[in-house]
Length: 154
Image 1 (tube, rainbow, N blue to C red):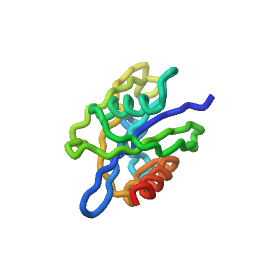
Image 2: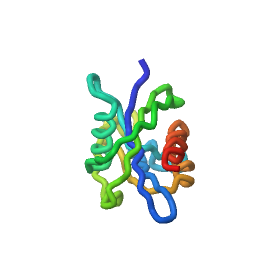
Image 3: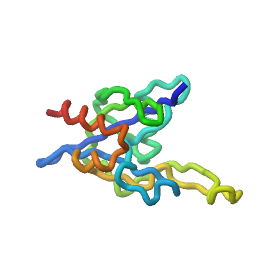
Image 4: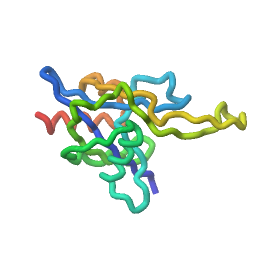
């Protein structure tokens, strides 16, 4: 059965534009990738967990803060990998500080076949991007989420 993830497309409004919060994956595989590597905060839905609860939990784990508000469903998006990502939009608390995120970590063998295990943050940085800039930064399979948010906010 294909994996199912859930996440939040967090946005804020300024006088000039809408900006969305994207996260950059941590670890050695992503360290030199930028355009097309960013994502909404998201993660796997645990057995017995509802999708929205998973999205909120994963966002908390990746940012180190609890995000709350009026969650609006954006739909389910099949990714090139076959995984499905279910997303909600939510307007950010104006005090949400992305400069000081506190992401959970994961452990993996690194370098490969070395027998050494190292710990890496799930997310190594987060940032606010205009919708146009986000369309360049975000993973291809998540781009339709931006269009859905833009249409909803018009």
